[in-house]
Image (cartoon, rainbow, N blue to C red; front, side, top):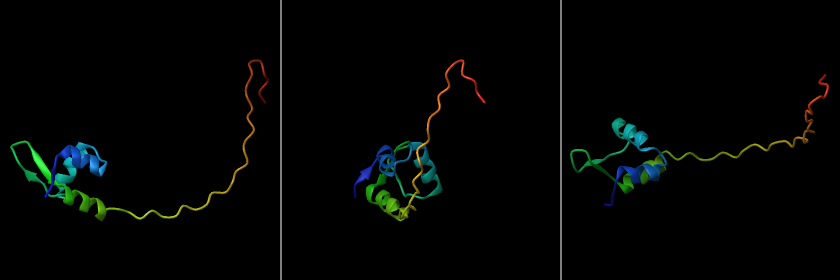
Length: 81
């Protein structure tokens, strides 16, 4: 069992430490208290959570081609209609 810090877990999940704290309060991840203000998480629990919330990427619809716009630039003194 490899134990990791909150910072390492947040990096693995690509969330902020504040978001990780909220996840821990909601009970989404198990953690172990190793001191009055220090916790550790099991690396396999974090990776398992990451796999459980993974969403399959859908195929993007093809975009139609759009003709390029012609640029009109304003020149001082030019009459704008």
